[in-house]
Image (tube, rainbow, N blue to C red; front, side):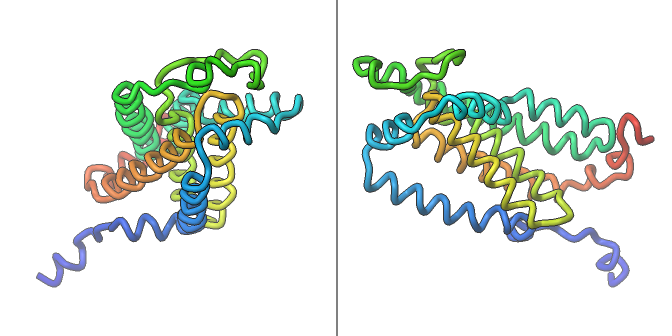
Length: 228
């Protein structure tokens, strides 16, 4: 009995996952509290035009680059690279993307079918600063898929990082992706805020679930296409 207890694998709890990403998660809780205050004290229009009015040519270019970090192809590319070195990490990252950005994001987008800024403010388009070269969509605004992907991917990297202090700059990177979605007039404040919550919540649960799957602890999952 004692021998079995000694060799039995230790289960990982949600608290264990959150502790490993504490430098990401604790500042994130503060961020969400601030977002809630902003939403309760300002209207959708006030928040949108406050962001949209603050635009610069250099920021237009940077926003387009930053927003691509939240594009699905970025996470897919990282997953393919990880496949060369670790089947487990590739599986975890790709699985998180599929659940958060695929199932959750797309399901909610089609469920709410919310209008994007271009359609919502169709009678005020002359007031809006649109970034050149950006295809302005009209539907499926809620939630922001790019934001979900950014928060999901960065919190996984923060979980894997040996230096847990990386959690904070990774959070800042995810926040910039979310802000870029508003700056580019692709989403509203609510879309981005909800997207961050979905990305974090789904990914933390996914990390907890995968950490407790014994088949993923098999030595063969530590291998990769270049690491046999």
